[in-house]
Length: 99
Image (cartoon, rainbow, N blue to C red; front, side, top):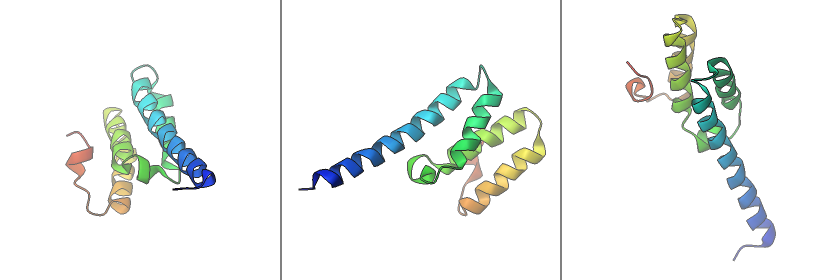
């Protein structure tokens, strides 16, 4: 059995992860109404320390790549693709980025 302190810490950690997932879901939903804010939220998520243990980094980066391609902001899209290649070395880009 775990001590109450351990249980509290585990619960706080899970709640933190749930908050990150909710933020990503909200950003994706917000995209149709306010793309700029949705992108800003995703960029903020990239700065979160526990992001990759909670949400696949490729999902967030792929979302940003798709957005910048739609906006014909090819340099930004390429920057996020390169970021994806660096942070996820064995990545299959087709898995995360629409063609």
